[in-house]
Length: 319
Figure (cartoon, rainbow, N blue to C red):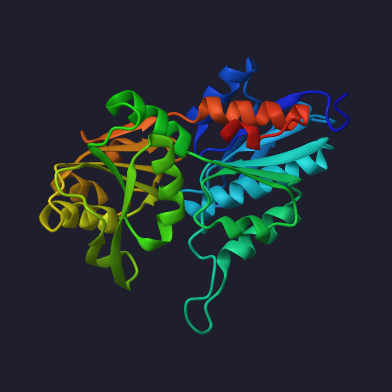
């Protein structure tokens, strides 16, 4: 018995409709009928064009750029579903914007990730489904259940097929100390050793590589990160691995391809041979790059949505 909703209904905002369509295709259901537009002054208008009373509603919306518009769009959709008597509302956020503002780094800093968590909860969301939060502790910012999916199994499957498992010529590298735990688990899935790029960040969106911890000479390096924004850190680490460490070739993967500013130019000019991203943030023509390849997360999110509806464990997906 499913007490919280008569049926699954998946709706999408404007941030990532292609992913929402893919999720619905995997679930063998139609995407919910809704329209998100804006008035001439920029105010967002939401119309839900089918009944949702008693339904288990999932709203697919990455809060990527334009971040504030997409966030507000999702909040208004949640409010519309709550006022239409939806049985349960799950905010499906493949990419959680403001996730990097998860702590105070200097006096009088806001903790914007906590503020956003409060707003989403207050809007009426009953639970959150997301992927690879920038910091795991963000789950604790919410007073509602949070399911944080992992992108690393998708990358592990890709590279095990490409290079073979337990390949001694391959090496996983964490591009910074903060990603070591994530990279260590990833290296276990590939059956390889781990190295770390130690760097010092002088200011936002820039970094200075200091040294390499581990032996990378002559190795095929696979760098893992949670996101690529301006690509300065990733490309700087790749350059250091080749010039200082003597790595043979560089591959990289990250869950979220923000790709802002000069990211594409940096990637093209870097020694990175191939960058694998997930489609938590949609690919656009402005982000075109021959080195970038996308893997879809639609099957993973569809399975997670089905398990949430059926009240089945999600963590077993990653065992």
